[in-house]
Image: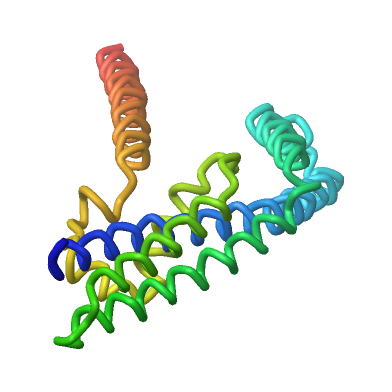
Length: 206
């Protein structure tokens, strides 16, 4: 194995480890914060509906509160293991930092022992596989993209992998969701606009 190949492998593993760490932290944040936000919004809606009768009869808002309740129940399934996500996130961050140190040593030291560095890399890679949780909360992947690409220092990984904005930094599922919602909105408002114009034209004609 040559130096460039090892640097590439370290960077690829660094991406997996760093993103994995952020995904664990994302799941931990969602489990910890979302239920409290849902409870606050539910109480606020209940208080406001006592003052404004229109709110108590609004089907959309009632459905929204019901959906938030379902989300809260879904997140409660992860509550018992919440601490593990934070714990594993910290461990993976430590491995990520060790990989960064190894990468810089291999890159900047001419007399690096490639075989010795490769063995250290394999040890760190094994530690990564032994410190991950496969079960993650829905949408944690989107949040992890933000935390990894926009909050974390990943210049050394990007030096090898050359991340592309649309291909790597924005989740494909997020793009598909936004396009789907935008398409549905266009269809809905197009029909609404057509009906409004038609009603206005009939009113003028009469």
